[in-house]
Image 1 (cartoon, rainbow, N blue to C red):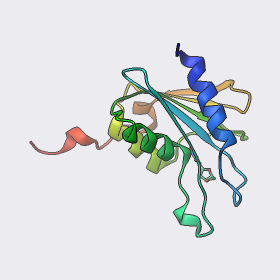
Image 2: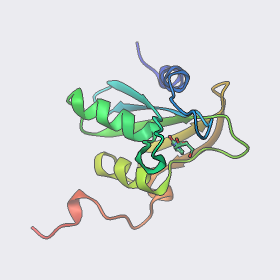
Image 3: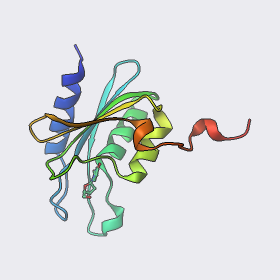
Length: 134
Ligand code: THU
């Protein structure tokens, strides 16, 4: 079975795998595809700081590798003063496979929802795969 709480659990488990020795800011992300598959990722930092990758990017890579294409729902888990929303780059990455209606739920380290947004709110007037000329 998979439901909304399974996605939170997957994000929390992913967060435990975070490799964040520089920022000490551990993030887990989990996404559900429109056909119900769940994929997760964590942030992976690097001594060459700009080479680090976000949890959302890891989850998207896992999804693509697993044959997924359409993102219905995302959960981002972190322990922070403010809700840990996806960075600008990750909003665009999510947009590639999501829609304005895709839900993005931010949860704390206990799995409690601290913010709920639609991707269209996080990245309004976005450029996406449908934006090119035919
Ligand atoms: N980070 C994520 O993985 N996802 C987010 O939504 C925000 C930030 C990571 C990047 C870096 O490893 C650490 O958090 C601090 O910015």
